[in-house]
Image 1 (cartoon, rainbow, N blue to C red):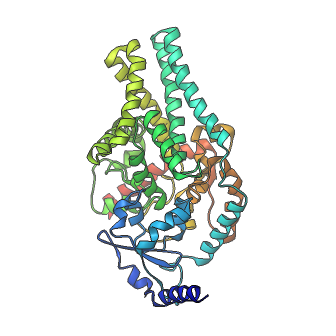
Image 2 (image 1 turned 135 degrees about the vertical axis):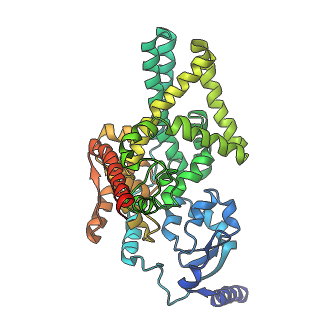
Image 3 (image 1 turned 180 degrees about the vertical axis):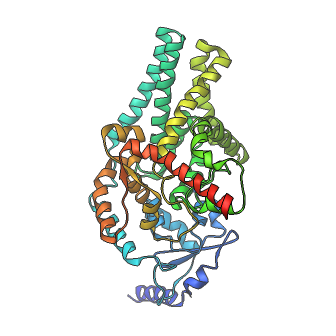
Length: 444
């Protein structure tokens, strides 16, 4: 009894003497060399540890000076394991008089969203149907096999080559959606098995890098459509997006390209070039510069398999051209699907909203159907995926009614469109932003 009592007194004493901080003080620590954040009212100094963060230092750094409770819970399915890394970083807690939310974020929406998440957990919506993912992988392998058999049986004429290219592009697109599942740790309960499967699918089936994808994609999820934080809206001056950027470029008389025609040249430099040119270059340069030899070996295994399979039919140069044609086709599929949910939404500087509101302002859905689910890898449920990135995609439609109900309660717009309209809205949004740029360029 005496020993237990002393231990209890020691814990109570440490908690009583733990430093407390105001939001004003915490928000000062949002620099690259000085980063604090708050999780469940506990204050952590992540300055040094952020360099070792598995998801990349940028994604965790984007929440420096903020409450990161909801994004922490969204990204980490195994909280017990992750909290072990937090203990050495703990430096204090919020002062008792301080609200749990910073910068006046809506506490009622936050509270309601956490109840919604708890409900989803009780409904077992984070539980995986492993047969779903096995069949998905099987159909990717089947497509690869059909592609090879078409050339083997019918020869390397134009028609068999085109058929095989479209079959392989379909396989690549579907493998892209599958690696996305493993990358978000949404298939297996243990993160390690997701990581292994992720490297296999994105590396051996697609020739890309798991770490490159993680570091890029997690930033997008943490701060979607926020300039300087979401790499998906960093268009390298080729496009201006949303309302703020085109007006700023126009006022500053920046004209890297004729942005009032961006909805037209999008067809030339957007879908055709993203994967075969920009992504391919960026992936290999990232693996080499970061000395990520494991991912490089996985990627080489894909190219070895591809060239061993198709050089006998096309020769070295022919196989290389064939590969890039497959990439060209896949790139169109990837760009249209990924942009229909985001580029048409609000794109701006950091708005400092609560987690729920920030995801709803930056994402929209496409109507459910068997084809839409398959075609988009269930990214037609982009809203639910962004709110619950570790939820298996086959359950996203089940949580959607709860999300709609919460949106209705708080007057938040829940956008859901037919597929064709969603695709056309990409061009409409680019045209609108280009017109804003031209008006600011000529008159402001």
